[in-house]
Image (spheres, helix red, strand yellow):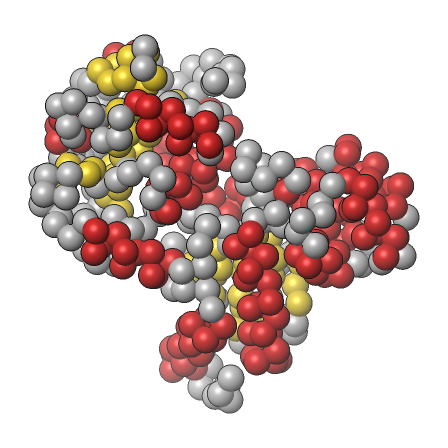
Length: 198
Length: 186
């Protein structure tokens, strides 16, 4: 079972398909799917945040974006509570607003600040903090995490494009290029009618 | 984690250009014994893990970007490994003091072994020492409770292999009596 390496790695793929359980931005039948495994306290995820926004803007209706939790709790002490806060907001239909607030305020992820973000979104701060402290969404976060490990997530953020791990650099141009490439090979094989360029 | 994955990978291949390791030992082979320091005054041997699965993660160097990410990741996944009663050891040619500082800075909850003198001796026995580069391959071994290699994998040196392969290998180990409950190391 030994794999002998050459210059490239085996391409890992998503073991838990995108489904209704996921937080999805964009059209459910978009031809391209970008999945991020991320950690709200991770500086590289923070740097990737505006890049993803730019990619979403450029790709428009062609792309749906999915965020899954991958908190590195030993390295990032606030990451778990931040993930709980986003999930708590998510049960009230405000996942993406909280997701954005967390990435825009990575230096402020203490419970008190999470409560403040809840208020900004018109959510009940006390309920959110209670849920966060109880770990109400821990099983879901853990499910995200394990699915990531089994899919070959090797750090945060890790991206998957149409189910395959993306191993290139994380700038908008490179990722858009990879999305374009994925769509091109897709339309060659099974979607000949979708050929609009990104 | 850096946003420059591919750039990092190129950095490694520039720094460690010579892949002249022998072939990594593969499944079914008896794992070579070793006795290495995990701290300035503690030594760890393969025999200490009889009866439980052991994961050996060889990596090129403490503090380097990909190794740091890989060890940080495994640190988070430890509870999953422990569900199989498995222990994890990182191994590189760095000295114990370097390992100690690295483990403290990254808050690692598993031991790092020092394949320091004779340099790379254990890595060589496992077929994963890049002699001309003076570092080990980025290689993974899952050893079963009887001391046999159950699975091995050598990753391109600049690529963090993640843990999917390790978990898949642990899942295919022959079922055993319930793993002992694991106390948190360190």
